[in-house]
Structures are given as C-alpha cells and as structure tokens.
Length: 175
Image (cartoon, rainbow, N blue to C red; front, side, top):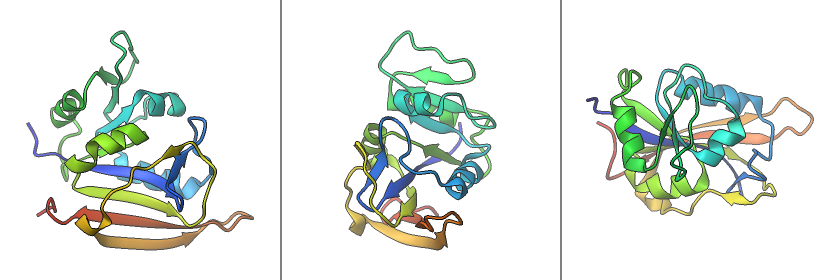
C-alpha cells in the first residue's frame, strides 16, 4: 500500500460558485489543461454527479466514483459507496506512486466531506462572480498556507482574470 496523500482540485468563482445545472458556468481552456497536467497518471475521486457532468472516465487516471446507488456501474471506472472505500481503492491503485498524490475533484458535498482529510487545495480562483447553484464549502483559511499563486488572464474577449493557487494545510503539511 502506498503513502498516498490527497488534495482537493477545484475551480471556483469569487463568490464560491463551482457549478450551475451540473456544469461549469465558464469556459476556461487553460484551467482544463492545468487540471489534466495535475491529475494525469494519478487517481481521482469524484461524486456521481461530477462524473455525469464529465460524461466519461478520464483517460490516464484511475477514476473512482462515489455514489449511494448500489447498482451504479461505469466501464473504465471503479464505483464505490463511501469515501473510505474510495481512499482505499486509490491507495492500492497502479497510479499510487510517483509523488504519492491523489485528487478529490468534486462535487460540493464530496469537497465538504473530505476537506479535513486533504493536505493541499489546488484552486483556480476566477476573479469575478458567476451565477450558480453549487458552491465550494466555507473553510477556515487561517488553517492553510498559500504556497503558490500564478496570475493569468484569458485570451478571449472577456479577458477573465484567474489565479492558480496552491494552499497547504498548516497542521497536515507535506514533508
């Protein structure tokens, strides 16, 4: 079994919106590239609704889907009924090597339930508000240390400013 640690990966608007109608309320290709670069070759855990919004298992990663539905099956993914089962699958997966990092990729309820388990949060902070119906949970920012921030602006007509931010938990920091 590996010594895998878990990190949250999220894109979030200034008003904490992460989704609307089970979709991202923005189109930001550089964020999708960032997501792919971080997760490729590593296990990812997602809720059923997040999986359904993506529509397919993401290639090059162990995809673990958490659902309460006992008969839910997806070819190319591992379906489990609890966070503990998902963590165990990831720790025993072929992807559980390299730097030993697995990712929680959503949605809101899964973020809320795993925030206390994660050592890092990778946030794409969109520097404007968006309309939405799904929000990243509130958390105590004083417990986290910002270890990286990259500022960017989209190339499209909107010129959306966004930041790639990495937070590390002060008490659960990586050594």
